[in-house]
Length: 148
Image (cartoon, rainbow, N blue to C red; front, side, top):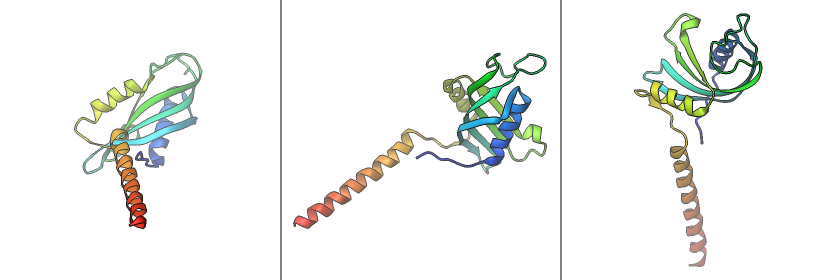
């Protein structure tokens, strides 16, 4: 079970950043927007996201994010770091986009070195497995107790 936090302000910040960097933010379809790490007491939060978004070249024909120069739909992986202590909107959220999830994971590992991370995957699967085993054992004991 993954930790899923509905964070509309982060989504809005990502959309705004996309608009400023040659994408059509309102077209963004998020398939993932998850809390990855947090710094105590919670001011700094690191999010991972995956988004399908339409790219439109800017007037100067320069792609600031370094992904693709072709207009149209693109699937991109991203990292967003929010510092809630910042007062100005343009410095509160930092965003990086990547072509692959591997590149994104490298950035996440670098950024979240000293932070509390929300590890999904093996730990989440381990918990699900333990719960499943406990349910099976309980049912087994129940069935066995019916015969004795």
